[in-house]
Length: 183
Image (cartoon, rainbow, N blue to C red; front, side, top):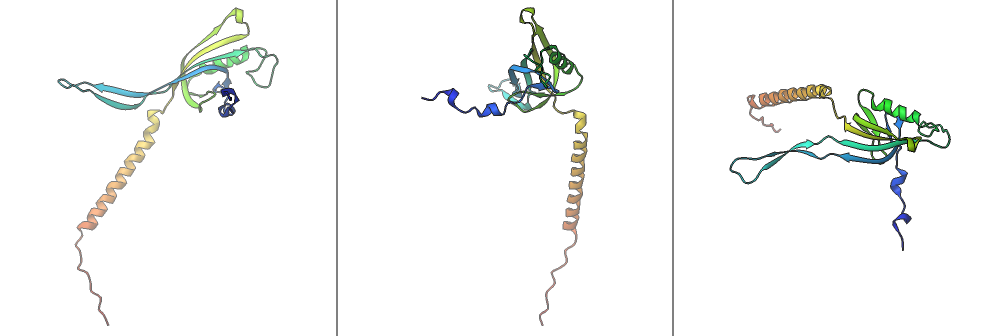
């Protein structure tokens, strides 16, 4: 009888190290929340409401990560005998202004911002700290869409010019078809 642990874990080969803007941490748990932005309209003297879909809701990531001492210093900042180095680097990145790249072990990298985090250390667990982090999807800056709007208006103008050209061609007087003279 085969059990689940005998099956090949293909997904384990694709695991990525957890990091935010290059500051690595161990990821204990992560959650991603989103959905649809729905506005429900209710009308007087009507039995049924109308639910209007306003698009996808922004993604929110909740992550529990940690930094811990490592038995020896390695070339990677996360694996050091002094856990304070990776802890301080992660704090620096979490408090930096602007968006950053969040890489979770099982998900593609995302552009996010960190509105809040909590770092906890307990003396009885010396050499270990826990981060509870919340990230919000960064999305697109509306001001960055200006070239797209200009492109859309250029397309509309070109379309209108083509339409005018077609209308002129269709309203031009038609010459009677000429007959070919046979010899």
